[in-house]
Image (spheres, rainbow, N blue to C red):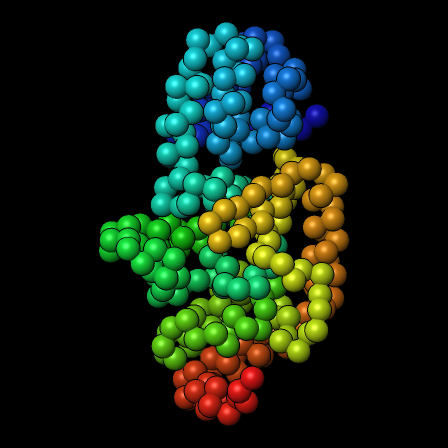
Length: 291
């Protein structure tokens, strides 16, 4: 049997919350399966809460208080843990940002935007400003700092294995001035090289492929089942149902086969960065035929 992995309750509010949940559950002599019974939540979900990796939904907090006889403690502190986990991220993404820090592997499909883990400050700022045109400078910068901070996971002692597949349109769409786009692409190339990550491009000439819908992220963990995260404009969803995770896994493997090789993909990004630096990107746009 592997050694027990205790949560460091001093790390942050969610970790304290999770450690307290585990203490109260074990004090009551209950297993995760027994605590989850009747809650409409799975054991992996509860396990990740105990490890400080996911927030406690209000309905589950009420269930836990009832089963453990904790006099409303978890319901009262549920909002505190939620706010602490948010930390500049959209509420629906807060769990994902925390789970990234504990993942063994992270695999992303990005059809519309460069993944947050690969963004520069200028690119992130442009996206936040476009999505929140009425936000104050402080609100925008809070989100930019939170997004860039996620990339600190690459500096961990054992960082996750990262694999990203991007649509070619991401490196062609001029979100920033030419200099900023060149810096973004140079940043991606450097990060992929330094972290020994793998990046592939799905060329615009690809007629169809298995992932023609929205952004998708697949994460695996050493001590918890894999999850899938899908996102649309103002919402996101974590999926941990094994059959669905398996379907996404198979679709991602097919997408790899439809994409260019890592070598050809990086060469395309280098060429695009040079085009931005030399003004050739504008020339290509001018020569593009009108629909």
